Amino acid sequence: MATEKMNEDWRRIRDQIKDIWDDTDFDDKQMKRARGELDKIMGLIHDKTGESVEEIRRKMSAIL
Image 1 (cartoon, rainbow, N blue to C red):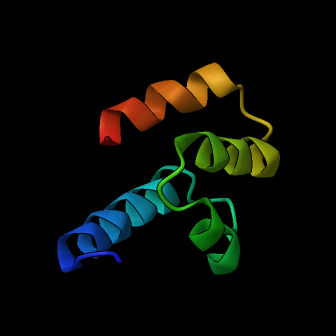
Image 2 (image 1 turned 90 degrees about the vertical axis):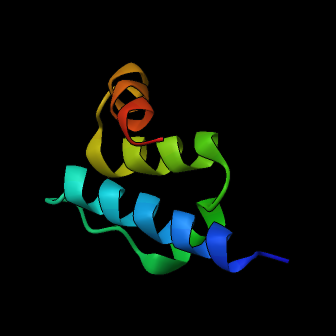
């Protein structure tokens, strides 16, 4: 079961992802399914933006 701290951390990360890729519409259900799994989150971003996985990884490392 997720703790309040885990939920806060997820909301912060989710919001930062939406800020970085602000021109991309992320479905909340898709984001929830990817929660806690970096590969799924990066795959979702890649699918939505077409950006390279390496570039996504670089940007994600700045927020994690």
